[in-house]
Amino acid sequence: MAQYGRQNRILTGSHYKAVFNNRLRFHSRFFSFHLLPNDASHSRLGIAVSKKVSKLAVERNRIKRQIRDSFRYYLAAESVQTHGTDFVLVAKASVQGADNHEIRSDLDENWEKALKYAKQTSQPSRRRGRDKKPDVKVQA
Image (tube, rainbow, N blue to C red; front, side, top):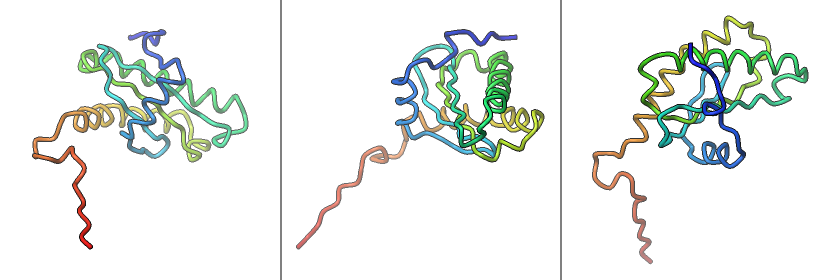
């Protein structure tokens, strides 16, 4: 099984900010996945579980453990080793009442979806001019 070491963590606030500013995200039942393709050969994970989710640190830590464990299994898959993507998972308030099995099934369903989404949107569009903002001309 893959290790969840220092190289697989998003550690600094500037790295979190870069992922949040990328605006590449999708939502699952319990989490918001924020994504940023990186130049490294490995994926990294950042976790945000606020007090809005639960006032109890025990609950917040349980959710974080489930996320980390699911991410380790995700890293162990061979297809993931070649892709470098930064993931920041933000827990939604709906995760509070969920048991560990529900959290893990939600996460396991969405890792591959997140990777496909990141690859799809990080590639430049083939359509001409799609990446540019349209010129708006106002005539008086």
